[in-house]
Image (cartoon, rainbow, N blue to C red; front, side):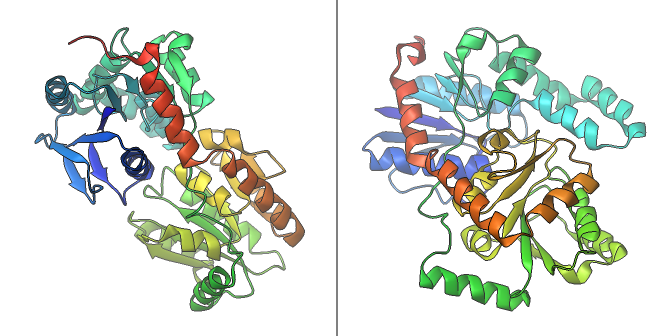
Length: 384
């Protein structure tokens, strides 16, 4: 098949949407398909894919229009859009819905700022463009099949855009269970020990957060929960990886008296080794359609704590493979859930269950499901 994948910027080492798209493109190439990539920029695209750069830097509307022109000329068998355009067969916005994300932003903002945020969304050009793009994407006839990455996102699509539920398929993100695996071999165990030794945390229970937006992922709440948990007899540490600005969080950790218990690592390309070095993954996020990082943590055999605002939490069993927090601002309850993971027996049992859940949701199975959607009669692209 001749398949086009559309994404704003292609980056094999970027966030969850970018990394998922890269793995899916590689899977399609290995399966012998003709893969075309449509994006503004490309970083480490796979060998064998045909690149179609769209030279539009800012306007999302202009990008979508130019992408449609390019795709019509290509004459592909299937077009799969990750959330950047409005033309194709399968639409799987990895950001969920913009409306849902904005409302989550209101929730984490102080009360005095929320009316300002609502005013900005009503009048500022950037938000008007978001609204115009999203309304066209969900309009009847734009895409034959819409994919929600979780039941939560599906409910948002129906609620905010009145999408007929039968048009929406729920397909959770898949995870690479070979790259992300528990440190069972002597080699991986040695790597785990070396990382923990470099941190000076050989005898600690190590919590981990990997994120590119610390505010959205709830690092403030996590640090406050760490300060509460530090009163326990068990030695603990928190490792935080990501390319966001960490200065204010360093100040907060110092004010809370836990700076020596926190490692702000910056951007890390080898996240698999971080999961293998950690004991528990924690992501008290305000909004995540289906966090790929959470799935990678589960595949690495880590008991995982996240929130009801994370679609990936639908794959967790509360109290069995991890915990689900209702309120991402509730550092007291979060500290209590984290305290439950200090028990070594619980961590071992929960980690095994998390790994089994990930093994039932692999990247290969994920890509095969999308191929089925490409080939289904409901996903045949309308005539130009």
